[in-house]
Length: 121
Length: 106
Image (cartoon, rainbow over the protein chains, first blue to last red):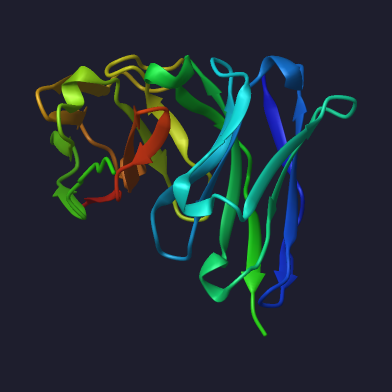
């Protein structure tokens, strides 16, 4: 049973960067595809990117290209999502999740509890 | 870019059947998934690959996907089913979520 534990809430100023972690338990990180999804207050789910098992590389949503970096540390089974040049619109809850089933019909299950990132001057 | 369109809200009386639609161009040629999200909680997978129900999800949840529309159906809706529901699909190697539908049970 995969379990995802995310890091705590962050408050950042505009222009700063934030790095959110997601630690996997119950499974080995290298055998999973971890993806990141965010949700602004009162808004819907927005996919940011994640590891593609087919392409063997990390894929990013176009909206975040150049501003987001997703990395992994297999020694601690931890995945990281770093977002730079933060602006107020980046205030959101950031979720990590595992994707099973690949890129043709994969599903997100389970999800971490989410990390609130607040961007405010 | 590919879009999935859901109605913002759906209302249903307890015990009745709720249907939530998700529209996308040739969505039936892709796999659709559905997630339930209650206030302050993380999303939970309720349907994968068009119609597969994960273990632990009640049998009253079912779904279909054909043409341009995927549909999530909740039979015998209960008050505990009140939540936001999101559809999701893959397009050209990227993930798309619908805008979400707030299901009200009253």
